Amino acid sequence: MLIHQSIGSFSTSTVALLFYSATVIAYPTCDIPSNAPSADTSAARVLYWGLNNNQAQCAAGTTPTDALPITFSFELDPSAANANNFSFWNAATASWVPVSCAIWAPTSGVAPELNSVTLFLTSGLTPQAGDTLKVCHAPLPMNGGGTTSQGYITSQGWCDPASTPVAGQGIGIVDAFDNGNAGVCASPSSGIRMIFSGGARNSSVTNGWTLSDIQNRIRVTVNGVATPLSPVGLGDSDVPVPDNYYEICVNYPSGTSFADVANIQMDAATAYDPHGCANGGMSVWIP
Image (cartoon, rainbow, N blue to C red):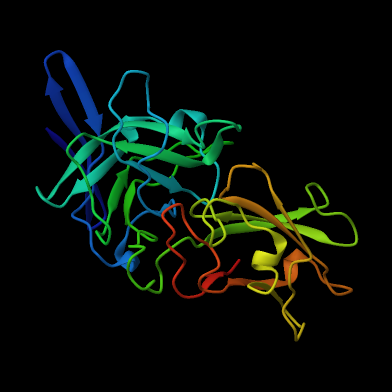
C-alpha cells in the first residue's frame, strides 16, 4: 500500500507497508530518483561515501549485511536512527526496499555521533563498486527541534579503488563551524570544526590524519586576505578511530575571524576511505 503526498506540482510517495505474517514493516518511498545529484530532493543534505562490510552487526546473532554510513550536516534527534525512516533503491527491481536496521555511527569505542547513521541493507542487496546508490528518508526529527523534509539523494563518494578517482567521488567536506578555543586549538589560533562525509584517513588507510597529511592540502580562504590560511594544528574528537569529525586550527589575520571565511578547500587525494579510495577532485565548502 502506498500513501501519496502532493506538494504543489511535486508528488512524493511517503510510506510503503510490507506485511510478513503479523509483522508490519513501514518504510518511506520517494519519486523515482535521478542519477544527477542536482536533481535530488533532500533538504537534509545527506551524504554517504560507500559500503563498509566490517561494521558491527545490528544485533547479536544476526547475519552481517552490507552497511551504508550516511552523514548529515547537522545533528538529528536520537530517535531518527530507525529503520522505518529509510529505504534503499533496488536497481534490479526498480523499487524502494526497506533497510534491515539503522544505528548511530560509530558503533563502538566512542559516543554516538548524531550526524551519522549507518544503514544495514536487507539480505540479497549487494551493490557493487561503481554502482550509483540511492537512499530515501522520511521527514527526520532534528536535535533541538524541527524536522527535515522527506527526500532522497544519490551517492556522493562511492568509488572503486582499482580505478582512477573521479571528480565528486570520495570523502568530501559536509560542513564546518567555528569552535574558537573550545576544542583542541589554543590561542592565538582558533578552531574550525569540520564534518566529512566519511572517516577520513591518510593514504595508509589504517590511520587517521596527522597535521602533515593536510597542512598544505586544506586551505581556508578569508575575505580580504590574499593568501589562504593553512592549518597550524589538527585534532580528531574520536582518536584513535579515524573519524568524520576533525578540528583544524588556524591563525586568523588581525581583524578577521570565522565570520570572514569565504571557503575551505581540500585537494584531491587528501582523504581516503576504508577501501583506500581517495577523494577525486577538489572538495570545497562554502558557508
